[in-house]
Amino acid sequence: SVGLKQVLQDLIPQRKHDILELKKNYGNVKIGDITIGSVIGGMRGNTSMFWQGTSLDAYEGIKFQGKTIGDCQRLLPKSPKDSNGKGNFLPESMLWLLMTGEVPSIEQALHLSAELAARGRQLPDYTDKLMSNLPSGMHPMTQLAIGLASMNKGSEFARKYEKGDIGKNEYWEYVFDDAINLIAALPQLTGKIYSNIVAGGKPLGQFREDCDWSYNICSLLGMTSEDSCNRQNLDGKQSEDFVNLMRLYTGIHVDHEGGNVSAHTTHLVGSALSDPYLSYSSGIMGLAGPLHGLAAQEVVRFLIEMNVMISSPQSGREIEQYLWNLLRCKRVIPGYGHAVLRKADPRFIAMLDFAKARPEEFAQDKNVILMEKLSEIAPKVLKEHGKTKNPYPNVDSASGILFYHYGVTELLFFTVIFGCSRSMGPLTQLVWDRALGLPIERPKSLDFKSLGALCR
Ligand code: AMX
Image (cartoon, rainbow, N blue to C red):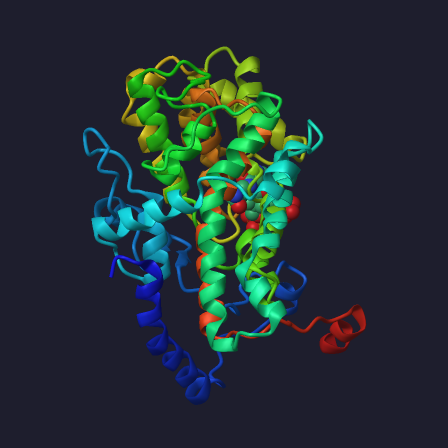
């Protein structure tokens, strides 16, 4: 079938059987010990979540249903409108892979893309009105969380649940519909937020039902050469590159295992049977934190500030000095380090490769040059400093500065684009959570007294 829901329908019985068997036959198998260090240390090393779509290896980085970024770039269908075939895969292809575990055919990917475009044509009128009336200057991530939460008014799952006419076995079907509607609405919602920030709410571009999801994000930001606004006067090549950057960025930020704040939050809130809009809105609140999604913005600010203070972005000696001063002031180097990864993030490398493949476009951009130079110098400094477990660049080191290059300069807005992408992984898991009948999450907590008792 070319329909994602139908394909899932066929997959679910076997997976459900598998999970019941696991529970029945192996429910008591131990997979680790929990230490006091983990209880008071952000639950590090505490392997305790089921998450299907992606897994994170400390050295190999992210894998999407077992596939590396390189595999995905080779295997996942691209847009047929891609003029030279060198563009990135469609995030819609990634969504299919996450949901089903299978690489979609081009027909399946395009069918899903068309379905998202058809469902995402316009925002519900209540959301549109609400977004138009938000105070100017409100944080873009607050706007996104409000917009998403408001869409719960149209939640199929919440409506059916309220009426009491669905059984547990059918939950996933309505969660699926909500998830697809939510993902479909993100280009419009993102465009609306951006227009609130930069144009007093005036539309910046057009939604095109014959175009893919990433194209529509770009168009509604006023960033395609064909749209009415074309705010940055991008020429055809730049506009095509920007759309490809968006496909790349939104294709590889979809998920990063289950334990990160936005994914875990979505899963946790959903486990209380809150609908996908409320669940993902909560995840967005977590993504807004500076140690999580907001880091891309910090990196851009950091690069711009450093470029003011040094004579050239190629000056290794001055960069090194700048970093040591920062560390002496007990500040972190933004864009470096990771809670799980222990090497350079392959997503960073993919973004860097995007810039390297376009030397003419970026040759004069001091910030992009500094970003690249920094990735050679900062690891050396952090290693010598000796505290950071992973001294290498993380995903946020490159992404923001590339958007900045093309003219998206409103730093607080980057995380909204991250939020578009990140919808795909956690919402996939939410569909599977309900399909497999996973229960409400309820870890046990300990107070000082109980911890003390364990130490005696
Ligand atoms: N610069 C300086 N010091 C750093 C550092 C950095 N980039 N990264 C970690 N450290 C320090 C920590 O502050 C900690 O110091 P402390 O012992 O005095 O508290 C020590 O090294 C050990 O930390 P860690 O175990 O290596 O990292 P963590 O798992 O606690 O935190 C992270 C991970 C990402 C929050 C941290 O590396 C950091 O703050 N990096 C900078 C901000 C950033 O780039 N965030 C983006 C993360 C990616 C994402 O989720 N989007």
